[in-house]
Length: 166
Image 1: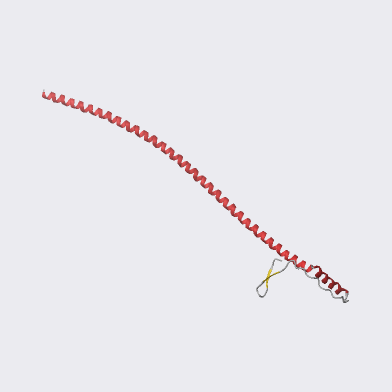
Image 2: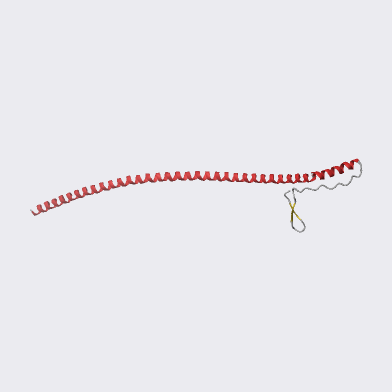
């Protein structure tokens, strides 16, 4: 039915599906034995009503149905393959998403840690400024004491010198 045949010249010839055979002219009956009469009668009647042609069409339809069934099976196999590929990709994407969420959580933790370190640095810097202020204050006090000690040392020296001169 759907088949194409090539003749010896290479041209394509398509079999006609709806070809109707003209009934053959029946010659006057010659008496034969009953069995052969029945067979020839069946052969003539089957060719007249086209049962042979109908059987050929049914065979070709069976082949076409088998071919369509094979195409359906191939499509199902392809679809199953695609579904598996999509599922694999889905799993890979979910795994990637989980990894990215973990990386994002790590980055958030690191940012929080950096903020805490910055706050601690500010506190230490503030304490260092206080210590620097205390050091400067104590240095000034020590300088003041040193001046007083120097002044007293100068007085004592002057007193000693003035005693020596006396």
